[in-house]
Length: 379
Image (cartoon, rainbow, N blue to C red; front, side):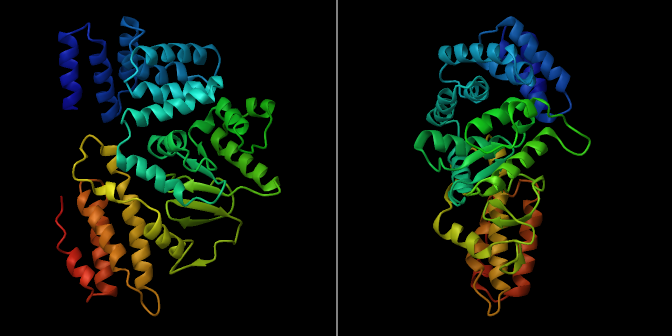
């Protein structure tokens, strides 16, 4: 809140500084509970300067892009494109321009936007590596459902910039609440069991959002194909039970299986221990998750991704220790604790750290890895 108060004081002293109004709005949005005030600040900034890239990047998603289509999107796209040309080094404008480019059907520009944010250095290495790890082990031609910025943009950026895993379709479940996004997803090659009229008729019900209905339509369409594409949810998507069937945790992905198809995977049902272990051993990039040179205070949202690795490493290590005969899970548990010690300020990491140490001490008290793990310095 102190940051918001500081920007408020600056803005009142410098009323012509439209970017200060935007920063004030962002600071209020960060602390929560000030939605109408944030909208008012962004609108005031826009009225003062409707060409500034910083202002447009803040204003467009909350006003123009709240509509499901129509002239608002076209107007937003035109102004955002103009702003990007005038201020081509401001990375935030490209995220919003990516969205409007999809809506108006300019997929080439959408790919360019994702390529541009990487080129400008707006995605730090841990974020790009998370995007890499998310889809690196995905089944061929998988459809991966994501939820937010940090699990959607990085794999899209890697696909755009280096062509990595372009066989995988990234589908954002939040955006699936927008009819136009459902159409674009279908037109981009993801099977959707709905024509344009049916998509336009979609309405949220007390028990199903539009997104949930769209996910079910994708699952129906996939099931009808001669070679069904694998359906997966990113581990970051907490609400991943919309599509019927079992789930098996396969690294950073929940794979959707037919009912009863989960079976026993390692020591824990619905966890593919062998596959996840292999992903950590051969594919996943983890070094950047504990990069001491990165400004983690600035990249706080990226830091919150790190416990995903620690939780998986814990499950691998604990699963190996639970086998008969017991296998050495020490290296995986040690790495989990190393990540948690580095990111101890993130909510839940301290509790998970203690849980791992306790479980490890009970199953393998004489482990040399455990002795070393207890020496890890909390950052």
